Image (cartoon, rainbow, N blue to C red; front, side, top):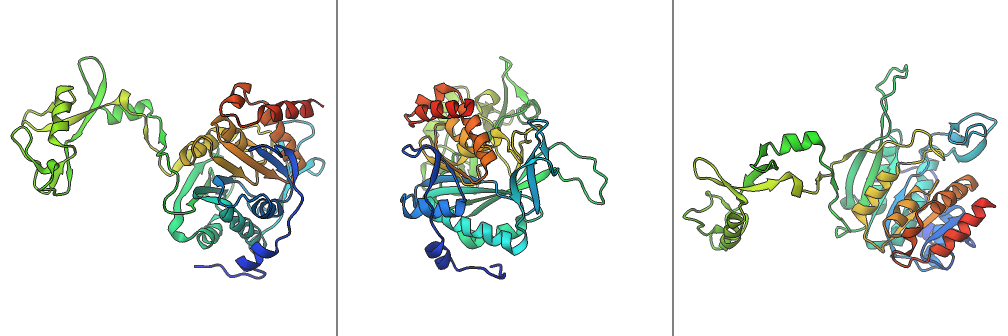
Length: 382
């Protein structure tokens, strides 16, 4: 499916005729890590054509404007207060709406796709008012087959505003990959105390909580080892052993098989040996209560995304980098990064945030950032 609207350009026109720009490097011109000030469309075109970064970006996170038709301003009276008043400096404008906004976003997504490596993913953060239209645009640009998740993110505590509708505590993250074979590190979320009590109901003589699972699984393999007899029994009809009989015997020697009163064996799983539970598509990462920049996102959420969909040394990009949270997450996790924003306030905030990252991190993989950090710190003090 495609959205049709006025002034929608062809991909050929966008890729060929978008104007380039001389890049304004705030830091990192000769480094893997780059902070660039400018209109991201022109910057992306330049990175693709002149800096030959096509196919080099391994992970993209973007938090673009949400088509709110508003101007976001930073209060002069209180450093961490976000205000919409007329007497404050504008951090950024979000005045494109409707088809104009969708085309604005689509053009950037096309360049981002060209910059992505074959194993790359993209996470696009958007709200419920425009997100359904953006989903169709992303299906068009990346292909519906490469849609991975529609993630609901709990962004704040419940509100009690007087409105004739349900309270809004969520926004939306659209997760796509470049291809079907993409970087995926099978992220887990920690077990809560309730999880442990509910999932691991048994306790052994040493006080360790555990549960048990069947030793067999669906699927008939009559000719294979997992269909053979073990300890005088075969797996039930239509099922096979999860492991070869020799491996089951080793589990028995290790005391990791529990036998029921009826002589049915089950594998023991200890709570303290599990690294968490599979992450689902509802996330609770609430944003800072007193942000340093409008719409600043939760650092733990960005770290989770970076860990889930990239590896150490990979290149992460955020072309709406705002306060630089994505860049900090990438830096702290030993990834390389490129950040782009055209707002002077965003660049200033990002530089300060990057300058505050622990110095120990900058020598971890030789990312040529230590000198930049000293440069940024001097600039911020000045």
